[in-house]
Every structure is written in structure tokens, then in C-alpha cells.
Image 1 (spheres, rainbow, N blue to C red):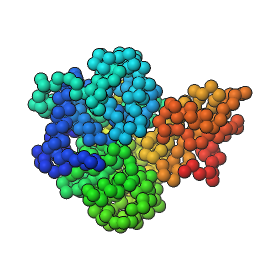
Image 2: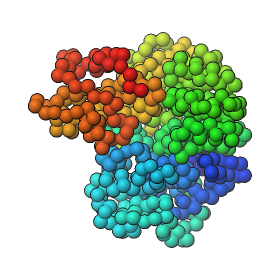
Image 3: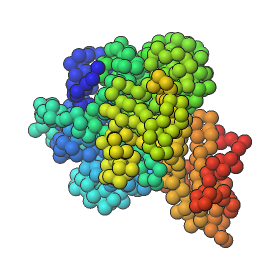
Image 4: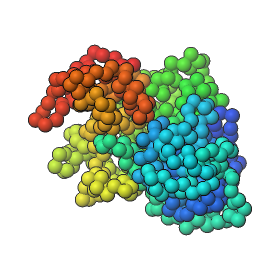
Length: 537
């Protein structure tokens, strides 16, 4: 099945076919497809009233909620481009993304739990907010394209107006539908910021075709979704692991069951109550938390027929054993290729599903390349390269990085080490780039090193990945101090915590004056060897 619709068009079609069926479920909240489309169109009218034009970049600084999903589709319906912003970013990270993405309207929604204030973080990123009136035009040097910031909680504050505090009566639902009809499938739908090997994240521009077809490939081709399915996915909607399953569910008219935040006890209740058929845990730490819940073995998860998880074979085999009535599937992907490129097929053997990540979706291709850029034979490790409908349009505002990542034939070089089987399955081995993956989040070692080196006592910093039982790996820093300077491990960790998201903060700091060197570079694999036998969680 090949769809020729945009994200907004996908919802319009789903509402026409499955209007009274449940579309989105949150704890204490439920919406059918007709209602979801109505809410998305209502929010689309507000966006237009706020001056949003086709092609404008609309930022979403929010945690998971029904409003997040409504706004994602509203932005697509109006022909604008959604820029989901990681809600764990700190001030400097926020300021960079807001400026780099040329966001013109930013929507802020506070977490219902109240554990953090995104407005406060935003005030730290844009000091100009303190002296701005809520409905006045905004002038922030760090984000020159940003015209207005609006909130969803019904309250105005310095520089932030209530999104509904505007007269949208002149904007009709027909105008929203007209904009949707004029949006092309190759137009940009999303700009997703992903960490690279540089200290700054890069914005991957994804088309409507990439987003919709990847969701359909996952749902129809691999999960075999029907309108009777319930897809549970608690992952952040600012991440492709939240967006792709959402599109998969909507493309089939299935229910998408989400959570305000990842909570294992609540997840068990939701999956049991909603009779979830697809469990998109995706990352090992989520699955392990579920299996360690006191009520896990009390039954009630017999409705699950698919459990989606990535990880090492031994861990995947344990999860398969814990869910004997379901098929555990593996996957491979990256943001630049639409989030997912390959997923296990339900008919694959258990060995194939635990040791390989499946074949690429029809319309996507995978190669494994040698150092010279030539394709390698099956069974030979090399750099994974991808091409196809899911591939991004390039890095926003960064043609140099785009050119560096693509070869002359249009293959995207992922920086991942892997191999192909004789029958076309892909296996991910490790990263070629200097990256960490902390609980599913890509983290550039250079970003953490830059923060550490910003401390006046630090002369040199090198960050490596250390194993962690829940998160897969976490950052550990090696630091050499400026001669005569003194600083403690706790002080450096606090220094990092004040500047970067919590998952990027080093779990430990090791002080050294002896660096293992090649001719010009620190040999990080030898630093990792120094951690042998140490545990970090």
C-alpha cells in the first residue's frame, strides 16, 4: 500500500472511514477519529488566526498530551512545518534550536504533573521575555524569526499569550481543509533535531511522504494493523519513536494509547484496560521496568500480539520468553531516514528476530559500505547506508553537513556499523561516530565535552559510553584540570546539570593527567578499558 497523502490528509481519511472508532487514549482521556479531526481543525483555525502561513515553522515545546497530537495534525492541515522541541532541553539548547530552526510561532504546554516549568526554562533561553507583553511582537536576538509564543494552559505570562486569546471566527474549517488540499506530499512536514558528532544538534527535514509512508509501512506491512488494534506507545512525541507509531495507528484506523510520561505501573494498567495488541516499548529500559513491576505476572496482557523492542539478542530473547503469546520484533532506523528503515516480519523465526533487525520496507534500500564507499558483500561489517522514500530532505540551514552525509548517488551514510545477511536483513553492530545512545536518546560526546571545558578548572575533557543496566549506556567523563586548579566530581556534575538535559549529564568523572593517544587523538576505546569492572547503574 502506497499512500499519496500528507499528515493532515491522513487524519481526514481516517475520520471519514473510522469516525466513531477510538483514535487516541490517554489516562483519563479518550477521543474518536471524528473528534480528533474536529479538534485538529479547531486548532488549525487558531494557528491561521495567529498568522501561520504554509511553510512557516511552528515549534512545539510540550510533553505528551492529547493537545500535542491535535497540534501535530493541525500544523499538517495548515501546510505549516512542525518542529517538535525536546522538552528536556535546558536554556542554551532551547535558544539554539529556536534560532536555528527559524521557528516563527512557538507553542508551550506545561507538563500536567508540574515537575518542571517549561515556561521557566524558556525564560532562561530568551531573557527578552521578561520585558515583553504577552500579545506584543517578540524580538529575541537568539531567535530572530520568532514572532510570538503562545501557551495552552489558559494563562498569559511575560511574553506568552494564551493560544485561544485571539478571534479566529473569520477563519473557517473550509480554509483549513483548503490549505491541506494544497499541501504536497514532498513538502516538509517536520524538522526533527538529532544529535550528531558535533556539539550542536542538526535539524533533519522530513517530508509528508517520509512521515506518512514510514508509518504505513510499519503498520500495514510489518504489524498488519487493523481498526481493531490498540497500539500502546508511551514514548515522547518529540521523538520519531512517538510519531511513527502514531502515524501507523492512524493509517489503519487503530487506537493509539499513549501516556503523559513513561510510568511502568500506569503502563501495565493501561495495556490491560485497553486490551493493547501492540506494545511499542522500543527501548530496553522500558521493557525491563515493565517486567519488574509487582503486578506483571498477575496476567491481563494476553491481548498483546506484537512487542516492538530493539537491543542485544540475549535481552530480546528474555522479552520474548516473558511474552510467549506475542511476537517480539526488532528494528533499525535513524531520524534522517524517517525514524525506521527496517523492522522484523511477523513470520520471521525467533533467531532472525533477535539477531537481525529485519529487511528494509518496500521502497527503502540498505547497503553496507567499506571505507572507500563501495558496497560490501553479505556478512562483512561496514557502514550502513540507506536510500528511499523515508530519506530526509537534508539538514535545515546546514548544507555542508547534508553534503558530508550523502554520497554522489544519494545514499545517506548513517555512521552506524552493521552488516547484511544473504537474504537482505540488516544487523546493527555499533556506532562509527563518537556518539552515545542513552535510553534511546542520541547524545554527542562533543556536546558534553564542550560544557565540561566551559568550567574554568577544566583543561581537557573526553566523554565515553559506559554500560548501564536500564539505559543501555550512560556518559562518563575523563577530565584533566588546569594546573593548580581544584574542583570535585560533584561540582563538575552539577556544572553540567545546570547547562544540559539530565540524560546527557555524566554519571561519573575520572580525573587524569595521562591520556592514551594515537598520533593526534585521544584513544577513547582505551579510556573505556579503564572503566572495566565498574558499574554505573
